Image (cartoon, rainbow, N blue to C red):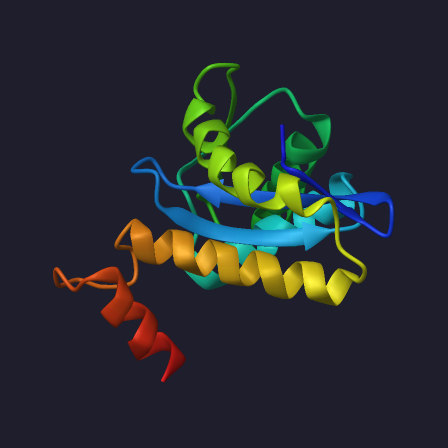
Length: 152
C-alpha cells in the first residue's frame, strides 16, 4: 500500500522505492495510481539510479504493468537485460515499514491545499529521512551538519 495524501479533499499517491538495504531510491507524488503513473515513476527512478536487477512489489497491477512497460522499452532499445519482476506479498515489507515514517508525519497534517505544497513538503520529509538514514554522506557526519551542508 502506498501512502495516500489528501490534497483539497482528494487522495493522491506517493510512489516510493527502496533498495534491499532500506535506502530510499526515489519517490514521486502522483494524482493517479495507474499503469501510466507507475511507468513514469520507474522511468524517473531508473534515470536517476540505473537499472535494477529485480523489482519486488505487492500484487498491484499498476506497478506490475509499469515494470512490464519498462521491460518492453528495454526490448525495443535492443538491451538484453530485463528487470525481473517479483510479486510476493511479504518480500515488500521493507518498503511498507519505511512508509510508516511518512504516514507518521503526514497523517496529522490532515491534507494539503495545493499539489505544489504537498510535493515540496514530501521532498523535505524524504530528504530529512535520507539524512537520518545517513544516505547522503559517506563519512560519519552528524545529521544536523548534513542538513546545514545541504541548506547552505
